[in-house]
Length: 147
Image (cartoon, rainbow, N blue to C red; front, side):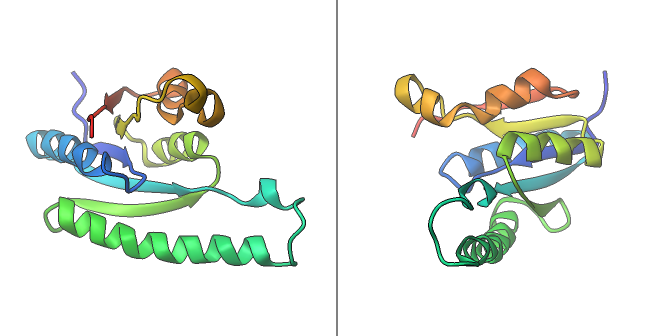
């Protein structure tokens, strides 16, 4: 059995994120591993064609990244012991960002939440978790907590 020395825990800062962090923390504690929390901020490049003042989307993207950095610092501090986890940010399509970060880290496990969307919501938003599960080169543990 492979020990999970590096566990990637993608979060979206929803009510589901602390539950995912708890699973990742528990597993890391059992094997002496570390957790890397990841937030993938959406890229606004696909919206660049919309009528907007030059630089509007860039400004929004910069504001989102700055806010996400602060939120990530608080999230890691509230959900992990000191030096047990680190927070990282990426920009882009969420599933691709998660897979790229897992590859770059050499992650042995991904622990992530699933919102369990169905019907029109699933068609409209897709499932990041499903895309990651289908294409990840390492095991993926999905966590679904009903609010």
